[in-house]
Image 1 (cartoon, helix red, strand yellow):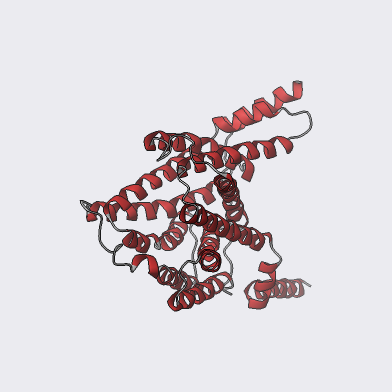
Image 2 (cartoon, rainbow, N blue to C red):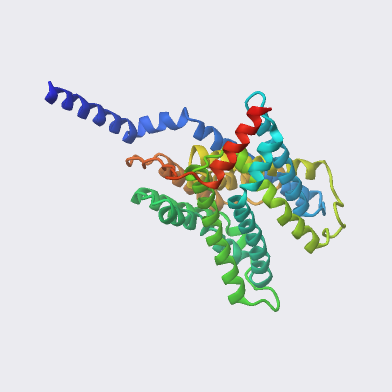
Length: 369
């Protein structure tokens, strides 16, 4: 009896492993999962945001401040996240103490907001000292830095198929952006620019981008507090608002002054920006940071195609070939039949911490009311 049970158990394991590694079963699992739905939504959001911004600034020549658009997007995300948190509370529990508790525990998301602010500053420094073409070339390294940080910070191991797919993806995106970095006027560095400073700035930004993506994923999936997506978005939006306010003051409101030049298109961009932040969090929860990067990369191809069809943007034969390479690389990574990684585990605290005691006291106080 024992031998038969062991044999049946082993057969069950073999069947489960076959289901996880068979390409057809992997494809069916991906097609029916929330992961694919969220990634498609993120891809469409990135596409719409890119095309609409191109229409706004390239065709309509609108001159609003991009930092103001980002600020309004964070305010929208803050309000909507607070609404979702409040609506999910148990009956009788007040929203005020819960929201104040989340703000007191927002230090991890504040760190992430500061990293995003530092990346904006580094982009500005880089573009002041090197050409847009060189900046575009270095920016493609974000794909590899994200995978590297995932391996180091989350102890993930990727198959050689996935690494080849990521390198192929990086080269495909680089080739697809050839009209940007291969222009004569963009190959020359800005007058008075420091090439070493600009190169260092863009490389630091690329590393910070990979680190920020994996840091966010680690907080969402392994933090002992196990706060939900809306709680983390609420904290991140609250921490980002002061950062963008600082940029607005530093920029002096742009060319047309504070909150000047706004239009319905700018409002739509702010809404899409807020939706993008929430979709990124959902994509990391249901997938990982690499798959989020794949969705963003796919949006580059789709937005360039729409830009060509609707706004007369460039779409050369080289770009078409590179686009096919990018799509094949995404498929090679997504449907790799290598055995899947074990899910990330939550670190359980061995002794009650300050957050637990604070939350328990909050629950008791609500119970008395």
